[in-house]
Amino acid sequence: MKAYNFKKGFVLLTLMVLVFSCTKFEDLTDDPNKATSVPPSQLLSETLSVLNNISNDGPWREPQRDNQFWVISFDYYGDQDYNWGATSYKYSTLSNVIAMEKEAQGLDNQDKYEALAKFFKAYFFDYMSKRVGDIPLSEALQASSEMPITTPKYDDQKSVYTAILDLLDAANDQITTAKSQVGTSDVLGDFFFNGDLDKWQKTINVFHLRVLMSLSKKNSEMDVAGKINAIVSNPSKYPLFEGIQDNMMRRFSDEQGNRYELNPSNYGFNRNRNIMGATYLDLLKANNDPRIYIVADPAPYYFDDNDPLNLNAYIGAKTGDDQGQMQVDSDAGKYSYPNEERYYSSFEGEPYIQIGYSEQEFIIAEAINRGWTSGDAETHYLNGIKGSMKFYGVAQADIDTFLSNTNVIYKGDNPSGLTQILTQKYIAFFNNSGMEAYFNYRRTGVPTFDIGPANKNGGKIPVRWKYPVSEFENNSDNVNAALSSQYGGTDDINAEMWLIK
Image (cartoon, rainbow, N blue to C red; front, side, top):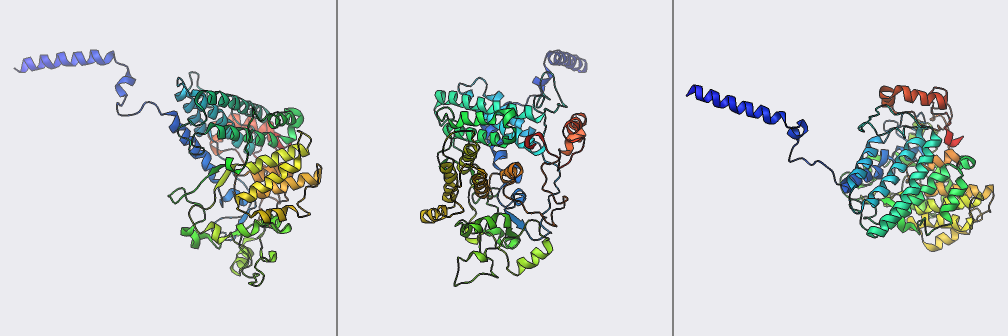
């Protein structure tokens, strides 16, 4: 019996070896309960989640302090300095975008995903490049290709922006094709616009205008004027936002992870350390702007019940001021805080604009002012102001009064008119659109940013971030070559990149 069992076991073992020797290893290791692919709709949602809260750029976060919209008085919770460190790259998100394209291949309606993928590539390449300068693009995201590249070269910034503009043009064309195939509402996984391709196409084109205007110093090299004119003068091919109802916005709710930054649950935690910034608030005061009563509360020390609308009671703190004295004055009630009723009464707060109608209108007004496209700059300038005021729910009578203010009436297509456009654009950016207020300041010098003892960067507002530390660890030759070609080999936050020279 024992001999028989041994022979039987030997035969079985031999058969097993023969079977497994003919079976691919990956087939042996496949888990039948594990998905081997991810629907493009899920990858779209993951990408939108990153865009929705990219690098904590949202309201009342550190980037909005860098925009000088608000300041923090308690050094325990943060500082006011401009001694910036390294930024982060977004290649992991771009990997999801490429996976979304791959998973959509073969679908009858793959064009809609491919069009959005082109937009996301443009968006994240722009996000990275305008912070540091040259970045990997042509050899990026190829670590898993047939001929893998794990240390991609850095493309010069001009080539990066050439590629970004090409992507945006192609995205607009392809989304037009997608609409002819599936209509306007057929994108699963889209929590921004519920799959509405019309709104996505408008968003892509407004972002295209944003990128083009960021290249204003490179008009002769990049034909910025011609490209802006091509978009603005051809609305049938390049549809744009028609009002604030088209804004690309993040909406908050009473759900963990999606609550507005200021809300009833953290009133006691941060109410007395968030102070309205003087750079922003003083611009509102200068023109008796009705938005001031909506976004800020008067400083208790100066408030008079008999004169509740007295603008002298609205006091912002200067970004450059020493925090020690700021805290003393804050405790004494000498500063304005964010409007308690608006920002602390609910968990929804106000929507956060990623890409908005007012920005679009100010871009077009600037282009007309510069002579880059035809039209009435004043009309677009006023549209931008009115769009912002409607976002805050300002009464029409108050809007009309504000627009009749001598300082607000458009001064014409000249440097004074341009300053008005840029100033109102900054005001409309309050606590939204990430660092766009700063990027516009970096490009134009408008408005004047405050610099003081809290600066800690030699009395300068930096013009870039440092490259990610991981690049020096994993791609040192290429990142150092990029530093040599751009900034003399130093990762200097005060060194000018091609974009702003």
